[in-house]
Image (cartoon, one colour):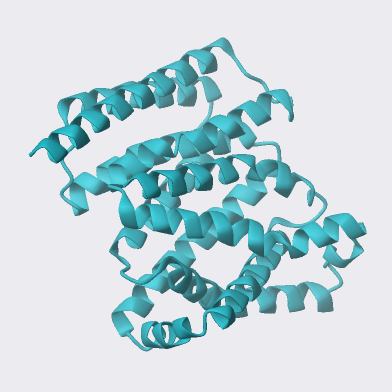
Length: 293
Protein backbone atom coordinates (compact mmCIF):
# COMPACT_ATOMS: atom_id res chain seq x y z
CA UNK A 1 0.00 0.00 0.00
CA UNK A 2 2.89 2.39 0.78
CA UNK A 3 4.31 1.95 -2.72
CA UNK A 4 0.84 2.47 -4.22
CA UNK A 5 0.50 5.70 -2.24
CA UNK A 6 3.73 7.08 -3.71
CA UNK A 7 2.71 6.10 -7.23
CA UNK A 8 -0.61 7.91 -6.74
CA UNK A 9 1.08 11.07 -5.40
CA UNK A 10 3.51 11.17 -8.34
CA UNK A 11 0.68 10.70 -10.85
CA UNK A 12 -1.52 13.42 -9.38
CA UNK A 13 1.31 15.96 -9.06
CA UNK A 14 2.13 15.39 -12.73
CA UNK A 15 -1.52 15.76 -13.74
CA UNK A 16 -1.86 18.91 -11.65
CA UNK A 17 1.00 20.54 -13.58
CA UNK A 18 -0.20 19.44 -17.05
CA UNK A 19 -2.24 22.63 -17.80
CA UNK A 20 1.04 24.54 -18.08
CA UNK A 21 2.24 21.95 -20.60
CA UNK A 22 -0.89 21.98 -22.78
CA UNK A 23 -1.13 25.78 -22.74
CA UNK A 24 2.10 25.90 -24.76
CA UNK A 25 0.16 24.41 -27.70
CA UNK A 26 -2.73 26.87 -27.50
CA UNK A 27 -2.57 27.65 -31.23
CA UNK A 28 -3.51 24.06 -32.14
CA UNK A 29 -6.96 22.49 -32.29
CA UNK A 30 -7.80 20.33 -29.27
CA UNK A 31 -8.30 17.33 -31.57
CA UNK A 32 -4.88 17.83 -33.13
CA UNK A 33 -3.18 18.00 -29.73
CA UNK A 34 -5.06 14.89 -28.62
CA UNK A 35 -4.07 12.99 -31.76
CA UNK A 36 -0.40 13.80 -31.27
CA UNK A 37 -0.74 12.83 -27.62
CA UNK A 38 -2.12 9.43 -28.63
CA UNK A 39 0.43 8.84 -31.41
CA UNK A 40 3.48 9.66 -29.32
CA UNK A 41 2.09 7.72 -26.36
CA UNK A 42 1.82 4.73 -28.70
CA UNK A 43 5.43 5.21 -29.81
CA UNK A 44 6.67 5.53 -26.23
CA UNK A 45 4.79 2.42 -25.09
CA UNK A 46 6.04 0.45 -28.11
CA UNK A 47 9.61 1.34 -27.13
CA UNK A 48 9.00 0.20 -23.55
CA UNK A 49 7.60 -3.11 -24.77
CA UNK A 50 10.57 -3.60 -27.11
CA UNK A 51 12.96 -3.02 -24.23
CA UNK A 52 11.12 -5.60 -22.14
CA UNK A 53 10.69 -8.27 -24.84
CA UNK A 54 9.18 -10.74 -22.40
CA UNK A 55 6.12 -8.48 -22.17
CA UNK A 56 5.26 -8.99 -25.86
CA UNK A 57 3.87 -12.44 -25.07
CA UNK A 58 1.63 -11.00 -22.35
CA UNK A 59 0.56 -8.21 -24.72
CA UNK A 60 -0.40 -10.72 -27.44
CA UNK A 61 -2.36 -12.75 -24.91
CA UNK A 62 -4.28 -9.64 -23.89
CA UNK A 63 -5.26 -8.58 -27.43
CA UNK A 64 -6.46 -12.11 -28.23
CA UNK A 65 -8.56 -12.31 -25.05
CA UNK A 66 -12.06 -11.03 -25.92
CA UNK A 67 -12.96 -9.98 -22.37
CA UNK A 68 -9.64 -8.19 -21.79
CA UNK A 69 -9.85 -6.50 -25.18
CA UNK A 70 -13.35 -5.23 -24.37
CA UNK A 71 -12.13 -3.81 -21.05
CA UNK A 72 -9.14 -2.15 -22.71
CA UNK A 73 -11.36 -0.78 -25.47
CA UNK A 74 -13.73 0.80 -22.94
CA UNK A 75 -10.86 2.27 -20.92
CA UNK A 76 -9.22 3.70 -24.07
CA UNK A 77 -12.47 5.46 -25.07
CA UNK A 78 -12.96 6.84 -21.56
CA UNK A 79 -9.42 8.18 -21.17
CA UNK A 80 -9.33 9.62 -24.71
CA UNK A 81 -12.61 11.45 -24.05
CA UNK A 82 -11.18 12.76 -20.79
CA UNK A 83 -8.04 14.00 -22.54
CA UNK A 84 -9.99 15.78 -25.28
CA UNK A 85 -12.28 17.61 -22.85
CA UNK A 86 -9.35 18.56 -20.63
CA UNK A 87 -7.19 19.91 -23.47
CA UNK A 88 -10.09 21.90 -24.92
CA UNK A 89 -10.96 23.37 -21.51
CA UNK A 90 -7.38 24.36 -20.65
CA UNK A 91 -6.82 26.10 -23.98
CA UNK A 92 -10.18 27.90 -23.84
CA UNK A 93 -9.90 29.50 -20.40
CA UNK A 94 -11.74 26.90 -18.28
CA UNK A 95 -8.90 25.75 -16.01
CA UNK A 96 -10.92 26.35 -12.82
CA UNK A 97 -13.72 24.21 -14.26
CA UNK A 98 -11.25 21.38 -14.93
CA UNK A 99 -10.09 21.68 -11.33
CA UNK A 100 -13.69 21.43 -10.14
CA UNK A 101 -14.14 18.34 -12.31
CA UNK A 102 -11.27 16.56 -10.64
CA UNK A 103 -12.57 17.61 -7.22
CA UNK A 104 -15.84 15.86 -8.10
CA UNK A 105 -14.07 12.73 -9.36
CA UNK A 106 -13.21 11.30 -5.91
CA UNK A 107 -16.90 11.48 -4.97
CA UNK A 108 -17.70 9.56 -8.16
CA UNK A 109 -14.95 7.05 -7.26
CA UNK A 110 -16.43 6.46 -3.81
CA UNK A 111 -19.93 6.00 -5.27
CA UNK A 112 -18.60 3.51 -7.83
CA UNK A 113 -16.53 1.69 -5.17
CA UNK A 114 -19.62 1.23 -2.99
CA UNK A 115 -21.87 0.22 -5.89
CA UNK A 116 -19.56 -2.09 -7.86
CA UNK A 117 -16.64 -3.08 -5.64
CA UNK A 118 -18.53 -3.43 -2.34
CA UNK A 119 -16.08 -1.18 -0.49
CA UNK A 120 -17.49 0.04 2.83
CA UNK A 121 -16.17 3.44 3.99
CA UNK A 122 -16.15 4.03 7.75
CA UNK A 123 -18.31 6.65 9.46
CA UNK A 124 -15.41 9.13 9.54
CA UNK A 125 -14.77 8.54 5.86
CA UNK A 126 -18.44 9.29 5.13
CA UNK A 127 -18.04 12.55 7.10
CA UNK A 128 -15.13 13.39 4.81
CA UNK A 129 -17.30 12.62 1.80
CA UNK A 130 -20.00 14.95 3.11
CA UNK A 131 -17.49 17.77 3.66
CA UNK A 132 -16.04 17.33 0.19
CA UNK A 133 -19.52 17.17 -1.31
CA UNK A 134 -20.44 20.47 0.39
CA UNK A 135 -17.27 22.06 -0.97
CA UNK A 136 -17.97 20.85 -4.49
CA UNK A 137 -21.60 22.03 -4.28
CA UNK A 138 -20.48 25.51 -3.17
CA UNK A 139 -17.97 25.69 -6.02
CA UNK A 140 -20.63 24.62 -8.52
CA UNK A 141 -23.09 27.26 -7.29
CA UNK A 142 -20.36 29.91 -7.36
CA UNK A 143 -19.43 28.97 -10.90
CA UNK A 144 -22.87 30.18 -11.99
CA UNK A 145 -23.78 27.74 -14.76
CA UNK A 146 -24.12 24.03 -15.36
CA UNK A 147 -20.54 22.69 -15.15
CA UNK A 148 -20.69 20.27 -18.10
CA UNK A 149 -16.90 20.27 -18.46
CA UNK A 150 -16.46 19.40 -14.78
CA UNK A 151 -19.04 16.62 -14.78
CA UNK A 152 -17.77 15.14 -18.05
CA UNK A 153 -14.22 15.01 -16.70
CA UNK A 154 -15.38 13.51 -13.40
CA UNK A 155 -17.55 10.79 -14.95
CA UNK A 156 -15.05 9.79 -17.64
CA UNK A 157 -12.12 9.51 -15.22
CA UNK A 158 -14.17 7.91 -12.46
CA UNK A 159 -15.36 5.19 -14.83
CA UNK A 160 -11.82 4.82 -16.19
CA UNK A 161 -10.58 4.23 -12.63
CA UNK A 162 -13.25 1.57 -12.11
CA UNK A 163 -12.31 -0.25 -15.32
CA UNK A 164 -8.60 -0.12 -14.39
CA UNK A 165 -9.42 -1.79 -11.05
CA UNK A 166 -10.91 -4.71 -13.00
CA UNK A 167 -8.02 -5.14 -15.47
CA UNK A 168 -5.56 -7.78 -14.24
CA UNK A 169 -2.73 -7.00 -16.66
CA UNK A 170 0.43 -5.07 -15.82
CA UNK A 171 0.11 -1.28 -16.09
CA UNK A 172 2.40 -1.00 -19.12
CA UNK A 173 0.55 -3.79 -20.96
CA UNK A 174 -2.83 -2.19 -20.32
CA UNK A 175 -1.68 1.28 -21.40
CA UNK A 176 -0.06 -0.16 -24.53
CA UNK A 177 -3.39 -1.79 -25.39
CA UNK A 178 -5.26 1.49 -24.87
CA UNK A 179 -2.94 3.40 -27.18
CA UNK A 180 -3.06 0.67 -29.84
CA UNK A 181 -6.86 0.89 -30.00
CA UNK A 182 -7.06 4.67 -30.50
CA UNK A 183 -3.83 4.99 -32.54
CA UNK A 184 -5.50 4.42 -35.97
CA UNK A 185 -8.14 7.06 -35.19
CA UNK A 186 -5.44 9.57 -34.23
CA UNK A 187 -3.42 8.88 -37.39
CA UNK A 188 -6.54 9.22 -39.56
CA UNK A 189 -7.39 12.58 -37.97
CA UNK A 190 -3.86 13.93 -38.43
CA UNK A 191 -3.97 12.79 -42.09
CA UNK A 192 -7.34 14.52 -42.53
CA UNK A 193 -5.97 17.78 -41.10
CA UNK A 194 -2.93 17.55 -43.36
CA UNK A 195 -4.89 16.98 -46.58
CA UNK A 196 -7.36 19.76 -45.73
CA UNK A 197 -4.46 22.11 -44.83
CA UNK A 198 -5.65 22.60 -41.25
CA UNK A 199 -2.70 21.02 -39.44
CA UNK A 200 -0.59 23.47 -37.44
CA UNK A 201 1.74 21.31 -35.35
CA UNK A 202 4.66 21.30 -37.79
CA UNK A 203 4.64 25.12 -37.87
CA UNK A 204 5.31 25.34 -34.13
CA UNK A 205 8.64 26.81 -32.91
CA UNK A 206 11.30 24.09 -32.53
CA UNK A 207 11.09 23.99 -28.72
CA UNK A 208 7.27 23.73 -28.75
CA UNK A 209 7.43 21.04 -31.45
CA UNK A 210 9.93 19.05 -29.39
CA UNK A 211 7.64 19.34 -26.38
CA UNK A 212 4.71 18.10 -28.48
CA UNK A 213 6.74 15.07 -29.59
CA UNK A 214 7.46 14.36 -25.93
CA UNK A 215 3.75 14.44 -25.09
CA UNK A 216 3.79 10.64 -25.17
CA UNK A 217 6.18 10.58 -22.22
CA UNK A 218 4.18 13.31 -20.41
CA UNK A 219 1.03 11.26 -20.96
CA UNK A 220 2.25 7.72 -20.38
CA UNK A 221 4.31 8.12 -17.21
CA UNK A 222 1.49 9.50 -14.99
CA UNK A 223 -0.90 6.89 -16.39
CA UNK A 224 1.59 4.12 -15.62
CA UNK A 225 2.01 5.46 -12.08
CA UNK A 226 -1.76 5.71 -11.72
CA UNK A 227 -2.32 2.15 -12.95
CA UNK A 228 0.26 0.85 -10.47
CA UNK A 229 -1.45 2.82 -7.69
CA UNK A 230 -4.90 1.55 -8.74
CA UNK A 231 -3.67 -2.04 -8.42
CA UNK A 232 -2.45 -1.45 -4.86
CA UNK A 233 -4.97 0.94 -3.26
CA UNK A 234 -8.73 0.84 -2.60
CA UNK A 235 -10.61 2.90 -5.20
CA UNK A 236 -12.11 5.18 -2.52
CA UNK A 237 -8.64 5.97 -1.07
CA UNK A 238 -7.24 6.52 -4.55
CA UNK A 239 -10.04 9.00 -5.16
CA UNK A 240 -9.19 11.15 -2.17
CA UNK A 241 -5.47 11.27 -2.96
CA UNK A 242 -6.60 12.67 -6.31
CA UNK A 243 -7.34 16.02 -4.64
CA UNK A 244 -3.62 16.79 -4.98
CA UNK A 245 -3.99 17.24 -8.76
CA UNK A 246 -6.93 19.68 -8.90
CA UNK A 247 -5.51 21.66 -5.99
CA UNK A 248 -2.32 22.28 -7.97
CA UNK A 249 -4.41 23.09 -11.05
CA UNK A 250 -6.58 25.50 -9.07
CA UNK A 251 -3.53 27.36 -7.77
CA UNK A 252 -2.14 27.56 -11.32
CA UNK A 253 -5.45 28.91 -12.64
CA UNK A 254 -5.44 31.73 -10.09
CA UNK A 255 -1.79 32.70 -9.83
CA UNK A 256 -0.47 31.83 -13.30
CA UNK A 257 -3.49 32.01 -15.63
CA UNK A 258 -5.19 34.85 -13.63
CA UNK A 259 -8.66 33.31 -13.65
CA UNK A 260 -11.24 34.68 -11.18
CA UNK A 261 -11.08 33.22 -7.66
CA UNK A 262 -13.99 34.25 -5.42
CA UNK A 263 -14.27 34.11 -1.58
CA UNK A 264 -16.89 31.35 -1.99
CA UNK A 265 -14.36 29.28 -3.93
CA UNK A 266 -11.88 29.79 -1.09
CA UNK A 267 -14.42 28.37 1.38
CA UNK A 268 -15.07 25.46 -0.98
CA UNK A 269 -11.34 24.83 -1.29
CA UNK A 270 -10.99 24.80 2.52
CA UNK A 271 -13.86 22.33 2.95
CA UNK A 272 -12.34 19.95 0.43
CA UNK A 273 -8.91 20.01 2.05
CA UNK A 274 -10.48 19.49 5.48
CA UNK A 275 -12.25 16.47 4.00
CA UNK A 276 -8.94 15.17 2.68
CA UNK A 277 -7.34 15.43 6.14
CA UNK A 278 -10.32 13.73 7.83
CA UNK A 279 -10.32 10.95 5.25
CA UNK A 280 -6.57 10.40 5.54
CA UNK A 281 -6.75 10.13 9.36
CA UNK A 282 -9.72 7.75 9.13
CA UNK A 283 -7.92 5.60 6.56
CA UNK A 284 -4.80 5.37 8.74
CA UNK A 285 -7.00 4.31 11.67
CA UNK A 286 -8.62 1.58 9.55
CA UNK A 287 -5.19 0.42 8.32
CA UNK A 288 -3.83 0.19 11.89
CA UNK A 289 -6.90 -1.78 12.97
CA UNK A 290 -6.44 -4.21 10.06
CA UNK A 291 -2.76 -4.74 10.93
CA UNK A 292 -3.63 -5.34 14.60
CA UNK A 293 -6.19 -7.98 13.65
